[in-house]
Length: 342
Ligand SMILES: Cc1ncc(COP(=O)(O)O)c(C=O)c1O
Image 1 (cartoon, rainbow, N blue to C red):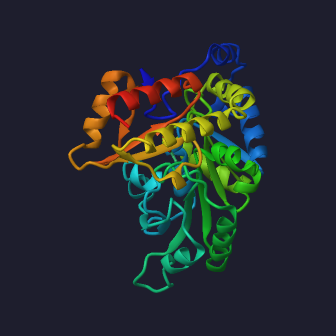
Image 2 (cartoon, rainbow, N blue to C red):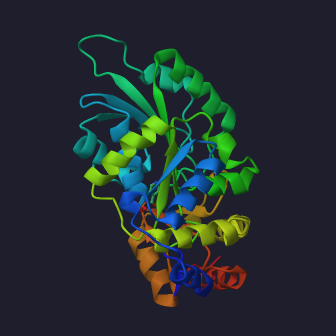
């Protein structure tokens, strides 16, 4: 099966498994795991922040960042299709008792003007707007890159209103690979940043949040409270470190493969592809014929050996990743053409 459902389906390589097996470990809840400490220091440095904290998942990372920067009853602003709003099981309400102001973006991108409009005036009737959350790259918009200039404009708006900013950078490595703009520059405008090792980088588990010392001190306590304190987590940190050393440069291969696949799918009369949205490793496409549901299309492709994901009645997602090389992309294209005639 050529599995294009997600970049989270990758299996650790032999070299990664070896690095994990040989990892130096300690009890990370005591702060004594040398592999975790090295990873936290390295990634905080890459993000230009003073401290980092290793966490089990991207979801926990986003939710702890929200928790550490809000009070119950506050409001947070995010894009309407943000992962932390759509796919995290109501986490902002459940964990932080905050409500979300979802703002529709274009390709996942919000403007400073939209943020300005979404900020609540200080008035006893209103919730207090506290935090702006952006996603880069934006998963549900197609792996799209948030323009740096707009982030900087939004930061000015945030400052004018005394707001904090959080970045869901689960795929920030892809934004870096697509633009050549380093992580540090992307992260600069944010008070907290979350990155994942378990997406395009191909590690089995692991995320990291970064920010200043006071923020990480708070986040460390919430990690314990959320049940995310891990013991000999160096085994996982070693996988992440291996991914940083060996799997970052190759992300451009995924981007190239995504373009190739998207163009081939766009060439089929059965599907529509918004090529503007194909900027990194994710390809969304829609069925053109109302008689062909996404479920049906996914089923027919699955029968021939390509797994993709239905994400709406007529919307389907394919994601390129470490375990999909150029040859498998060509094979997948062949299967698309076989099942849905050009
Ligand atoms: C943009 C984004 N943020 C956060 C997450 C959550 O990561 P995890 O699955 O590790 O909880 C994902 C997962 O795909 C994601 O795409």
